[in-house]
Amino acid sequence: MEIAKLGEFGLIDHLTKDIKPINESTRYGVGDDCAVLHYPDSEVLVTTDMLMEGIHFDLTYITMQELGYKAAMVNISDIFAMNGTPRQMTVSLAIGKRLKVEDIEAFYDGLRKACEKWSVDVVGGDTTASYTGLAISITCIGEAKKEDIVYRNGANETDLICVTGDLGAAYMGLQLLEREKSVFYQQVDAMNKKLQEAHKAGNTKLVEHLQQEARKLNDFQPDFAGKEYLLQRQLKPEARGDVINLLRENNIHPTAMMDISDGLSSELLHICKQSHCGCRVYEKNIPIDYQTAVMAEELNMNVTTCAMNGGDDYELLFTCPIGDHDKLDALESKGIKQIGYITKEELGTRLISRDNKEFDITAQGWNALKE
Image 1 (cartoon, rainbow, N blue to C red):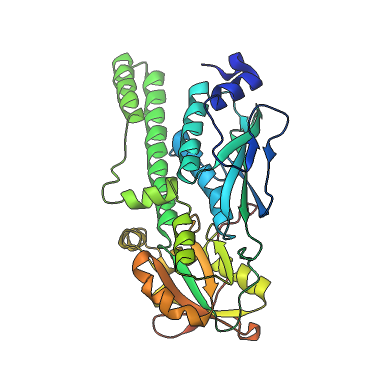
Image 2: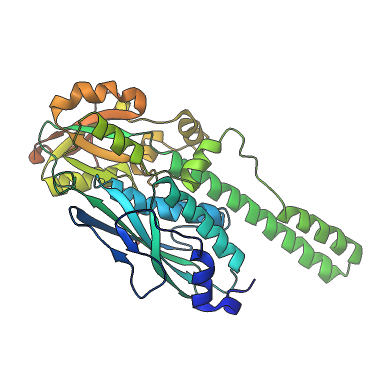
């Protein structure tokens, strides 16, 4: 169905008619000029992300459902990174003419699945037209007690540096998708060239054969066997609310925390800059999945560089007092890894290699404004 037939308000009604608020703080959701929220005893956390087609995502290899899920999760992740609980979300879309109602339905299906996982209410948003592809703007609202909120600027000398999960897999998934996309378009270009030559030569029989081959090419699916984890990490990231709950259950309160969206190196530098400290991170302690290491070798890339600078992992980077060492050590089997420690600012930010050489940590992570 064409979106224009529904109109802006008709599309909003169509997408949100089955959304029912589940949070007590949601007094009124979709349907009026504003949502009404009530937080009597908590601090309110607000985060906004904008995702642009061609910059943050490519519809060649991500489905609309996957995109909706990812767009929601990256915002939910920011609330968890403040040690908060996500509660509400607003969603605004600028939609290109090539997209149909069914495409936006698929987007909302993925978004709602992400929201349902963490009990987040969709309470509003906006839609408009776009001449430059799909644009997504999401605002997520959460809550936390004042004493529970964790900022980037709280790290102290001798604090332990920890990360969750493993790093670099999402970046390797992106490299894999980009490689297969490049191969596909090379084949398309070669086929188009053959068709032009056949048309020019007036060879009707060859033209018909090549057109059949071109149709088969459109149905081509790359073989990703053995690399499913890398694709999942890139196309369907998970916000680590489970880790937030785990830390609370074990009475561990981080001193500084961020989610790893732009790469471990960039996030470490953010914490060190805002906390006025330095750090020592050990290469041998950085958690890397086997598939990530294999893919890096296949692409002739340094796996540590990928893990430090890849981005899109949406794991948590946090610091804790050294007195929590034993508690954290007991949680290593749950996916929490100690990778280094905080130092005095004048000692700088350094990576200790496997052969005990020191290197400056530089921000080589994702930068959407870099040409």
